[in-house]
Image (spheres, each protein chain N blue to C red):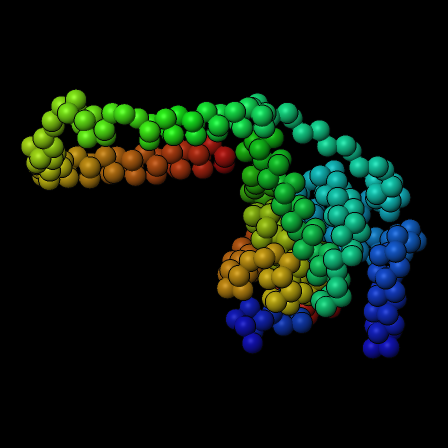
Length: 133
Length: 195
């Protein structure tokens, strides 16, 4: 037997009150209104036209394929392109970022912000309860 | 017991006929379950007009999808699951359409203002107490106590897990006891002795 059923006996006051109160009476003439609704023809569904038509998507896809094929068959070797990209050393920046994140004042600031947010949340909840009352 | 079996046969006959489009059978099924369905939709929506709309939609959906009902389970459980989902969908739609603090807990303020209810208003007291619960929980506790549905049936209707339903029932019963104790004082607890 589940924990709820253990407590709910046939003479449970809450159950008796529910039984005594009974159902919410459905409004009169409901059957006729439902059958009328069922007999009514279904409303035609008007789907909005898409912003880009199927033909538009097909043309775009074909263009993308053409551009890709043109890129693959290019006379310029891929390695030659990297000579134009300037060198960029990431390591010093990462070290500076780690120093910044691991600083004790950073942890203190995060803790402070979290506490302030919690206090603000508690204050708002208290005020909303007072207003609703 | 004989009358119960007879009713079951009548119901299965009505379902079979309704599947063929028989209007009288459809009307008989609606007449049989309209109060039950309306009670669930009203518990969730807490508004007569919205509840009637949801009740109508429930029956329209159910009668149109009657072919999918195989008869393995109870018809009432199947119908309840449609009613519960239809009412929840209407509730979500209403929440997105209009947002009001009153809609969240319409009778909370009134409940706090009321001290006690006269003897004849026990039903009103129950309505007020139910209004303190979230709509889904009010429907679940109604299914359990009014329709005397089992936990398994409620799980089927709501699509929630068994443990979740148990927690909701336990919490709802506790809140209802508290609210009713406040509204009806000792009368609730003498009910079983009087009946």
